[in-house]
Image (cartoon, rainbow, N blue to C red):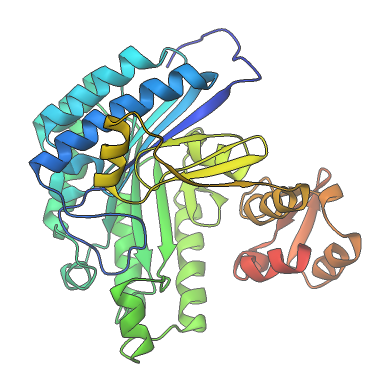
Amino acid sequence: MNSAPAHNSDAVRHLYVHFPFCARICPYCAFYKTRGNSADFAAFCDALAIEAKCASEKISLDLDTLFWGGGTPTALSTDHLATLMRSFAQTFDLRRLTEWTIEANPGSVSAKKAAVLRRAGITRISLGIQSWEDDLLCLLGREHDARQAEESFRIFRDAGFENISVDLMFALPGQTESQWRASLERTIALKPEHISTYCLTYEEDTEFLARFELGEFRAQDEIEARFFELAMAMLEAAGYQHYEISNYARPGFQSRHNEAYWRGEDYIGLGPSAFSTRKNERWQNIADHREYARRLSAGESPIASTEMLTTEMKRAEQIALGLRSYQGVAADLLAASNAKALLEAGLVAYRKGRVVLTQAGKLVADSVAEELL
């Protein structure tokens, strides 16, 4: 955003805000979310403003990135969002921000809302399109169709956003390779700066897992690998750098906020269910938006649980997360014997003192990480 002086090296530079509300509850999603009403939205906004002020007073913050996720932040009204953005600008020093992301669903986008977000200083949109096939969008429980998805993308472009990320999902029940190829082609044609591609996983406490356990759905490793390879080939050929297992970006448009997570940097999370990690401590807010609002309005802490991170826990996270990134993991973090075996198997390579996944290794990234822990 600007060329500000160097950041305070001791301060936390990354802030995440969890918005718990969605117009619909997607049957595959395991994040904390709910369908709220106008009273819930107002109570949440008031509570979030209180928590933000408390965080600014108790924690040394020198923000580089801000990420509003969920849930669906854009499920809130334009007025609620505008009020929150003014509150954040008054509470935090946002002048050093290099990236302010908001997640958006196509069904909750309007030209007015996009213009308000742009004027408030948001620089990056993460648009949850997921698929360009209307039958698959219906299966996923999405509130939009393909026409609305493209219209929403163009609304954000017309509002002046020059950094838009599109989310896609693959290996969906019944999805064909030709459908996946067509989704990638249609996305590339829009020329977003960033594309995320996520393989469907069957998460705890979701309708999709229940259907999977009943045998209605099944995972097929061969199909998942083929779809993943197709995404890598097509997106890299289109000029996108595969900088993390699920993420591709044009040069200079990597998600700075997510890269901070993958490097193991400290971050603060606000909102119901949000996690924070600072030095060797991690805590999570209560995953109940009404109790979250009640506690903060009563002057109580919204924190539900805390844990202390050991050196071994932090090392394991560094390996698991770092290996997913194109930057890889410092070789001295790894057991030499394990790394050597994976090197000989062609799953990892050495690059400037770091261990990185090869194309073959990317197909089995989780297994490689387990071997290196």
